[in-house]
Length: 215
Image 1 (cartoon, rainbow, N blue to C red):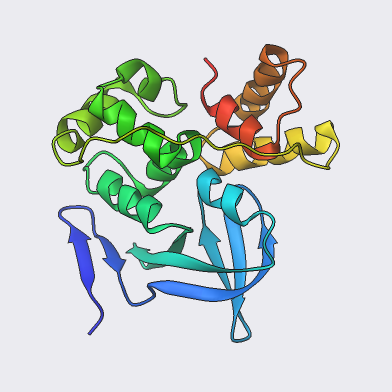
Image 2: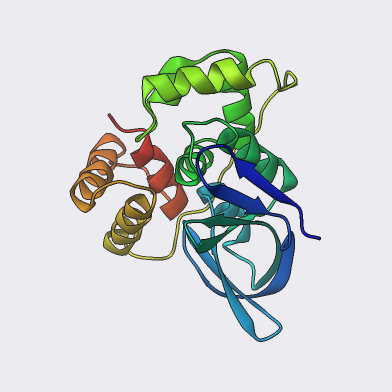
């Protein structure tokens, strides 16, 4: 029997019946992945962190979570067990939904998120678009005692994309909309980020991550 978890009062179930997929990457962008497995194309919602690790791959193995809510099935994909566990921790908090958890993992590397929670860095966490101060404080209260201290952190780096800047901007705005921003606010966030980093050849994932943290 597949394992099923249900969050009380929300009618939201998480099934463990699809725990992992290995296949050919048909399409990918900073928020979505289509993976062909045995002739079937699986659409998965992913974070910017996962995209950063699969962007140069033609095939990959993705850890998955199948969420059923209001008769709708949604697959979430994670390149590392660390990120999957963080998504489960975040969504275990009543006020944190699947999209908000992906936004957090898109804005901060799991190690940086871990450190921010341990140090109770409300300023950093609340700087992420769509994450209010009440949600930040709940995350800190509920998770700070459940995670072990880190011995240092890690940073992601990447080479500049080969796409022209206007295409990167359009793709970044689309990714932000999928993460919950309105089209207007997404475009404004991208434009503001470009002004803030005028001489920095940002990759697509760097642009999305920084745009999520613009004020």
